[in-house]
Length: 159
Image (cartoon, rainbow, N blue to C red):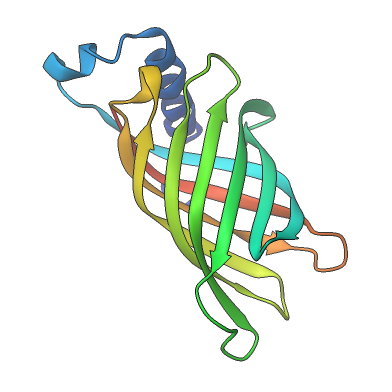
């Protein structure tokens, strides 16, 4: 687990869940707490539409589903060999409440192996998550025949 404990992932999920039930204005006066994030996701590439690639995924802490994602990626140029670069938002919707987090990412996928990575340039929240910031990295592998993928989500969220 590269030095991270299961408790760290649980604490990250707790931050998200606690943030949903706390008013956003509480962040203005409260000290900011940052927690490491280590989650997994199982998803599906829904293919391109008007040049934009769409994906959806379920996000898990262990075997507990804690969120879902919907992403829209725009290629940032032609492939360099087998590597395609992309950018776009990944919207994370916790299973509790109606707030969201959006990770704006830049990434690349190796079209020959299906391996991909994307790192956020910023994370912003809505509603009760409006005070949450941080950095997230999404890394995994997509099955080119089916579009199914698995990924890990790591980083830090502060709120």
